[in-house]
Amino acid sequence: MQKTGFFNLLAQNSFQHRKDTEFYKLCTLLTNQIFKSLNLKENSSINLWEYGKIILPFYSFGNITTLDLFGLDELIIFSFYLKNKENYKKVIDIGGNVGLHSILMSKLGWEVEIYEPDPKHVEILKNNLKKNNCLSNTNINQYAVFNEEKVLEFIRVLGNTTGSHISGMKESPYGELNKIKVPTKDIRSIIKGVDFIKLDAEGAEADIITALSEEDLETCDIMLEISTENSAKRIFNHIKKMNKVFIYSQMSNWLSADNIKKIPNSHRDGSAFISSKSFVPF
Image (cartoon, rainbow, N blue to C red; front, side, top):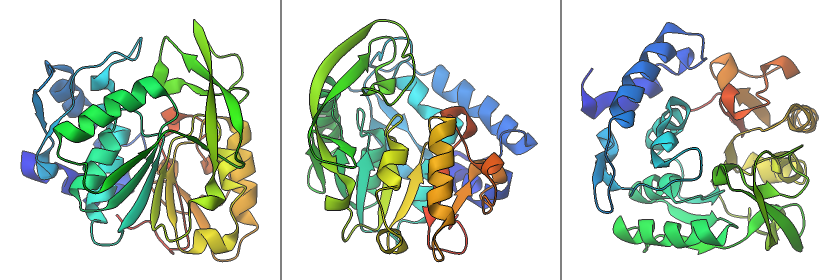
């Protein structure tokens, strides 16, 4: 396997992205060896195959670090971005975190609106965008995206700040918690004219998706993480009512998820894809 073709290899084998396939297991072993061995420093670079070199300094989110952002499920999403380089122009990164997805989207030439509510992450995000020369086509919005506009309580999970969330979106958050207030942006106010959304809203995904109409979703594809069984049911039932919009899942090797058992209900199940397209464009 040549390094220069790894993301293309992932895209070409999208029919083997379910976690029980031998292809997925082999790629997991290979990528774990590569990324777990890296020694990230302030200005050290990572060679991401077709994307080239990016700078993503080491950062601890609590029990996980920057290196955990390169799991195979994330790499699969990165391969999707690369495959669709010419298909999207104006995109939104909901749950921008420290900027890895936004950096790669920017490198593809997309216009990226980033939404990240945690002020600590926003400061790191700004720095990472600057280090990667991504300021010209990205814009940071320090908001949580939701189904209404107001100020809400935000739970910062100190043991893993990538799992921080709007209060009430997750049952029994674990470990030491810190509560802050964050403003929200209504998804309906930002989706117009957008081609694609990467959605990682830590439990708020069902409130966001169910606020959208079939008309909204006919012109905008969404790659999303689903956090809970209840969210999965709400999203599945909402999309099922539509005639021209469909939901696909990594659990079904990106085939149509025609029953609730094929919908992920945890980040451990991989991603889902909502689109008016008749197939997932890998």
